[in-house]
Length: 361
Image (cartoon, rainbow, N blue to C red):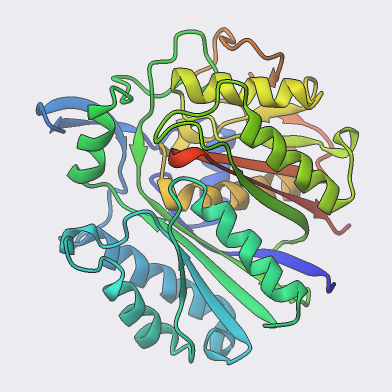
């Protein structure tokens, strides 16, 4: 198996348009979530992680075009080479065209903007899509099928998604509070992020080594997770095995942490079962909202920024931990050594995924 390196290539979120700008706002404790007036199926005022400088009527197309422009600026002609594969992670893509294929515009933009020879691989598996996409990219590299794989995670706000989560009574009327005793649910958000996985350390941006990843499905319920955290437990165990690291080597866990009652409880049980009680843990949903297919990608980028700056970012909204599993939620920023990071995700349909990255210095 070949070594796999991972670098960040682009990120656009409610907090800004570059990884350093966004990270500094996170260090300061700023949230990109603001109250939106008269939205949803009852014209309510609810908090959303909305990107304010998107000017077109179709946010998805604008956001994907901007992401491609950033990738070209950074990587140049490499994005078009036959040895480079493109993977798209998105749950809904250009949802405005439904019931037609919502990924048609995606393929056209990738072709016209990046001039990549192959068709992009589309991964759309609920909220674990981003982690699955990165794991798939690493498999392509480690098996020698491509030299480079660019993973783009992207989703935008829409009435379709907002109405859906409201029908599940999962939307919070305040900024989300993952793992807190008084958590009320999620805030939805929109974002795009891109990472490059490569057989080489290209040195264009901060680079880490991808050690391993896996996924599982607990097959519990169409929208509810296993109450025992079984799927996430199995995914993390397999990721540790593939990465050849033990729990004592993990310096930080970037959890999924949606702020819903059942998700956060399930995660805490899984981490507790794995003996990860003392490892610092956060959810980044309080900074951006839940960005669905983009979440895994942008949260990996922000985790790499923590590794680069050797500082762990606090979990926004935590006042009193309100889950049964014993976990170490970051209530304040922590300056510490950060070498090895576990990223996890869970989603509708019982999907769970995880990966581990490690500093190369």
